[in-house]
Amino acid sequence: MNVYHFSIRSAVADHEDLGYLSLENDDEAFYLAKNIIRETMQGGDDQYAGASMVITKGKRQVDTIPFDSDEFDENHSVIGDSTVRSEARA
Image (cartoon, rainbow, N blue to C red; front, side, top):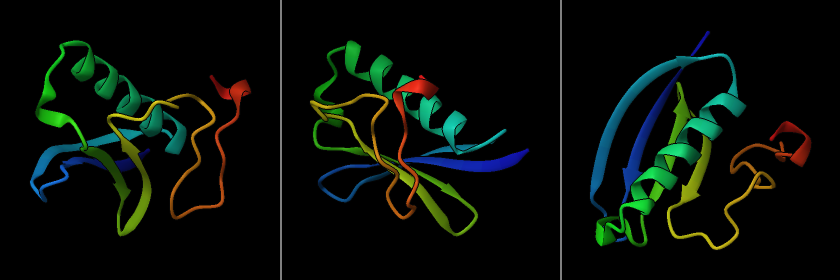
């Protein structure tokens, strides 16, 4: 198991720590973050407009996912890594 850290960074430099979670791999961390964002945005809460979910594993940034992305799908590429998510992993 790998330990991932999840946090939210807003456009105005606020930082919200969501905590740590042990997961199998980067893909699990990505899909968990994606689901958290979807649930948050479904509530119509404008508090997170312009914010991004940041996922780290140790000192490595695994991914940064914008909350207001119009192209929020399984083809999202990982920032800081050369991996690209494929539709086959959905």
